[in-house]
Image (tube, rainbow, N blue to C red; front, side, top):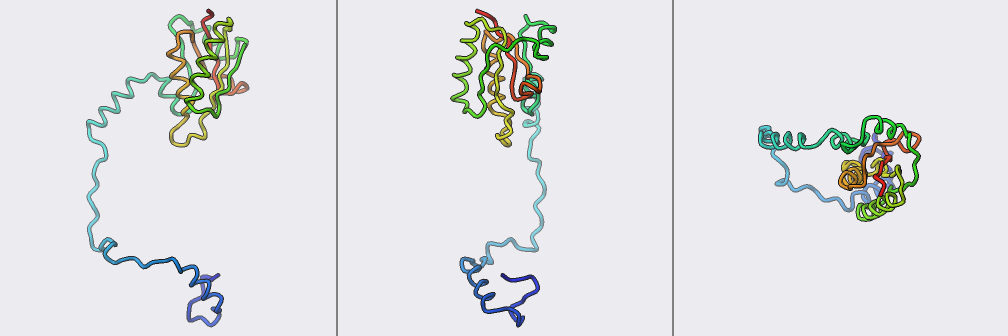
Length: 187
């Protein structure tokens, strides 16, 4: 391998060094001069990426979401309650004050796998007379820039199912923002 202070005319460059260089450069191709930008060309003028219409659309969309939807997109806590569920009940649920009678772990599942399993679990738990269950959805740390995909979907699905009265992210000891306590309407 070449060191930084060697040159091709340096007597300390060995034949092995030269051969290593030739092998390293064997697949290299020279740049075509016409593909390079001229050096004397002026920089392009900056342009705004978003128009005022784009900004208005983004603002309108943000106002449609409630604070829970906005927060959960950033890995925060989940919280939902129907109008019939009081503050005291929500406080008790959030503190882990209800006995968890069943649990499902969706962590690592695809959305196609998770939705029917969660729906069956919620329906079965309500039919069994369970009041409180725990759903582990994970924090979405492996989702990259997409954010917590499964967590967001669970939040969306549960809000639309009638037998779900409320849910809130669990205490740290029970999974923190990677799981929720779900309060069910008994059937």
